[in-house]
Amino acid sequence: MEKVSPSSVIKSVSQFLRSECYIGGRWITSNLKQTFKVYNPANDELIGEVPDLAEEDLKNAVNVANNAFLTWRKVSYRERSRIIRRWSELLSEYRDDLAAIITLEEGKPLAEAKGEVALAINYVQWSAEEANRIHGDVLPSHAQDHRLLVIKQPVGVSALITPWNFPINMITRKASAALAAGCTTLVKPSEYTPFCALALAALAEKAEFPPGVFNVITSSAKSTPRNVKALIDNPLIRKLSFTGSTAIGKLLMEQCAQTCKHVSMELGGNAPFIVFESADIDNAVKGCIASKFRNTGQTCICANRIFVHASVHDKFCEKLVAAMKRDLKVGSGFEEGITQGPLITEKAFAKVERHISDAVSRGATIVTGGKKHSLGGRFFEPTLITGVTSDMAVAQEETFGPLAPLFKFTSEEDVITLANATNVGLAGYFYSNDLNQIWRVAEALEVGMVGVNTGLLTTEYAPFGGVKESGLGREGSKYALDEFLDKKYICMGGIN
Image (tube, rainbow, N blue to C red; front, side, top):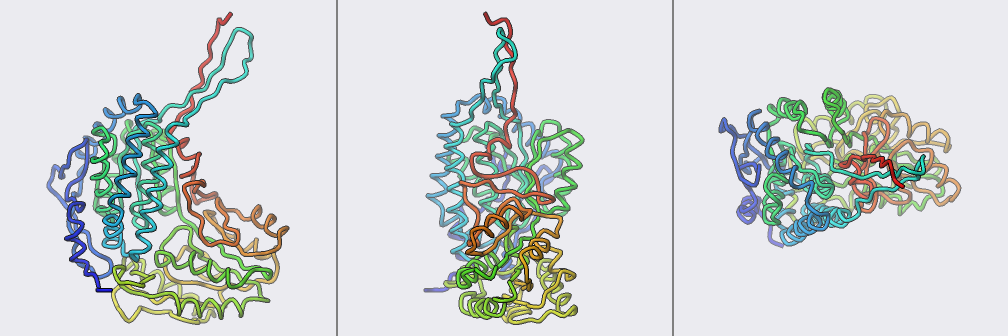
């Protein structure tokens, strides 16, 4: 296969590389004419520039979204469903372009990017169907002449703040649910991946969402704290949905408390991946590769701490090393066969290095990898270390990189204690063929999602979210729309 150059990709998807924000059905620039640059993380080449909005721009965007909400909330479920379904059809029609933009500005391999777009389409289709199933209740009455009802109504203008690691799917998962519920949306994408969001806006325009229903606002890293604070302080914003770090999520929750906003938070993880003595080792290795190294380890639900029973530790380690060397290929995401792209920033790269050096200084051993890849830049070798203990940084922090740390354990009770010894609880995985153990461990893990004999969890059918400091609320599944709906109780008296 001929090697694809990023410059040729930019040309092929140029219709979607918009240099304006999308507000109120119009493509606009900042009032101050300020912009920021977006680079390809694989080679640091410039992709383009987008507006760095000012507070006045945001105020206008909120007003536009609020005016649109007054009409959109009254649109029939069937009509909302039709428009959202049309959006999903356009995502499918332009799926290759969207995948190319993901790889261009986020760096993940093109095959993974195509998988992300496919999942995004599924979420939008799901929300289109759920728009028709916003059901209330008729309750038993406390009095013979009273009737009690519960209806569901959209909460209002919703600000959606999304990360860079799944720049299409994170937006569609949030926005499609909000739109189906009857809310209008303001999407604030990561400064690293704004073109994905703007491409979605271009397709929303083609789908003929009414002006102001779906909006995209962009901000540089420097402007983001100020602009997000301006959104939160605006009383017309009634809902904030955020995906990002626990530290930032806590700060945003504190700010949202001032106006009692609805909040949904999908925050950090530190997922345990446990291999018990009864596990199918080959299957466990396959699941570990899928969970740990997808998107070069830059996922919030990836295996961050790998606990292996002492009786199968060496066998698992040997097979995992062989699979890593055989299956993981580092390089530009546009090259055929590549499975590992670059890390998103120098800061992310430095964190992987820090976790490795800290572990080695405390007695861990590098089995494979451990340093910058020969390609240079922010490419890092897929790395496996053994002899990891709970006092090491890699046990206490989310690495967000291609580092697999192996811990050894001897009892179920001990490994559950170790797995739960963290302030976060997003996802957890374990491999076992003991049915009684499967139920015990699934119930004992303090996480919002559990993978049993599988390393992949995400689907539109299931609720995505965590416990403890991994956040509040759920995305996807039949529960998703409830995050954007208020329940109103109606008491009718004087019924004869």
